[in-house]
Length: 299
Ligand code: NAP
Image (cartoon, rainbow, N blue to C red; front, top):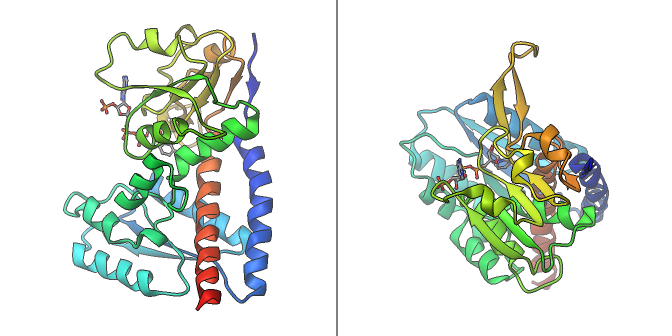
């Protein structure tokens, strides 16, 4: 079997057409959706993620402002910046590029964002809403992007045994919460594996849909996949490769070549979940601006 490709760039492009027209409609009403991003220190991976988000905003007509803060920034300065954006009518979504330096209390920073502007979906209010299936909240962007890839790729998770490898608060747990909801586009039977799972391959081989989010380069190999499964690779890992100009290349958690021989469909990494994450961030930011406009009209 040679798997067909679930192309995140292509699916993203289609979704972004709809987002762009929503932005135009808002701008006709003199509302420009705005995203505020906080980037602390200058880890190259974080810088490149933030640049990609800025680029996406520019292309869609979304205003974006990035606060690039030094690694020694104090927690109170960081909280002040969030407070300014919480009050601002120009900023509808606030995103903190993680990780933060160890002297900053990450939970306190996330909790300082108004839940209505928490377009990354990490505030406990939004985490709770994601779990109970309350769609007035914001679900985190990477898990939402995975669900969109499945649905738009034609792989409805309903009734499918979906195995997620990884239980982080950013990917694995919210993804499990989204997929078990009793609604169309979800309704999956979900198993979550992690570092204490014994004989992990015995679970991955049962998966109709296998989602890898462990941050371990190419560790899911073809022999761990059920023939005909759908494989979604969330992993983004830098591995040394002297043959590349930069000295490294990006790869997923799935060993693509061996997996593609067994799976029915597979996402590449890069080019799968990554573009969807940014697209869902744009969607959430515009949704927040639409809500702002709706409230403005109601007053
Ligand atoms: P994380 O916080 O490091 O969590 C990794 C999870 O995988 C943990 O739950 C860990 O288990 C589990 N794990 C690690 N090694 C394992 C193993 N050998 N067997 C079974 N489980 C194992 O990472 P994350 O933030 O969720 O990110 C996961 C990957 O997705 C990374 O490569 C990251 O770069 C990528 N990512 C991509 C996007 C995107 O937009 N494309 C967005 C977010 C993340 P324990 O809980 O037991 O430690």
